Length: 82
Image 1 (tube, rainbow, N blue to C red):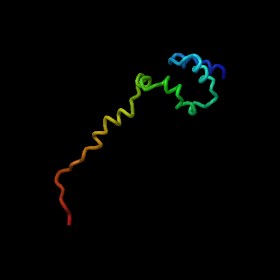
Image 2: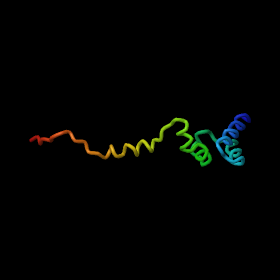
Image 3: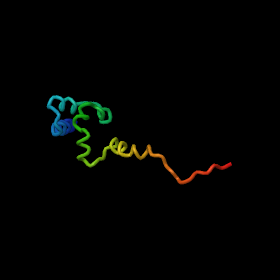
């Protein structure tokens, strides 16, 4: 277990987190899914980090296609059936 703490600590330090906070979060007993939305990880693994990893922004993709969703589809002439 100590090895995992040291690895977490070193990785947080590499990502630019200050020593005190890196040590505090590396020693957390919470499971990974519990700290996934923590402020420290939001700062360490920001959007720029994920873009550098090759992932695409979902919010950007949605905003790029928002105009397409608002357009009205036209299929030629419309006839009223009686």
